[in-house]
Structure formats: C-alpha cells, structure tokens
Length: 135
Image 1 (cartoon, one colour):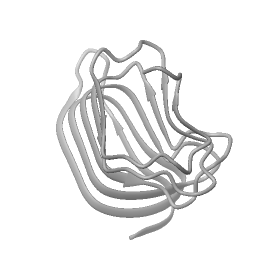
Image 2: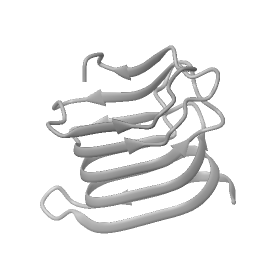
Image 3: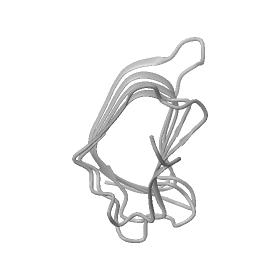
Image 4: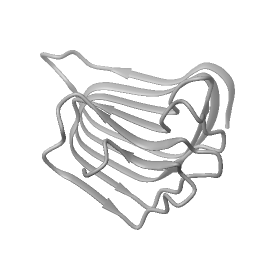
C-alpha cells in the first residue's frame, strides 16, 4: 500500500491529446490528495481503496470510456463526494459501496453524461448517493 503520499495518483493528459488505455488494479493508498485523472480515454479501475485528505478520493475530469469496479474509500468526507466526475462520459460504476459517514458518493459536474451505467452498487450508507439526482 501507499501511505501518506502527497497525491495518491495524478494522471493528466492534454485536452487536445488524451491519455489512452489505462488500467489500475488492486491498489490501497492514502494521501493528502486522492486519485486524479484528467483528459483520458479508456480507463479502468478495479479493486481500489483510496483515502484522501479533505477533498474527494477520486476526481475524473474530461474522462471518457471509464469503468470503475469495486472502488471506494474507508475515510469518506461528509462535505466532499467520494467520486467527482467533471465533464466525463461513457461511465460504468459497478460493485462499489458507500461506507458509513459518506455525504455524497457520486457527483457529476459540468456536462451531463450521455452514457452512465450504475450496477450492483450499495449506496445505502450515503446521505446522497448520486448528485444531481435523476441521473
């Protein structure tokens, strides 16, 4: 495991040239900042546990064709979503679980995703499972 990192991960492509074909599997990490991925296509996360400082554990910005499978945090923040998606599309979130103390689990900012599939998730411990509601 990665412990007390400044940033768990920072994957940053360019708006005009995204990073493609990333796979992350079986990672447990804590850091002042969480897992950031921006300007990327064809990204998969499997069995991740990320605990971050005062912000979101996972932030995806302009990420397309994203699969999140069994990824969560053990240190949710009541005032920050566990997973924040900004202007991202073609998203699959499955087999994730909101731990006790979760404020918002999934938050979508910017353009509404035209393709979003949520399956086999347990958001029962989240005050707000998905924001905005109705996605």
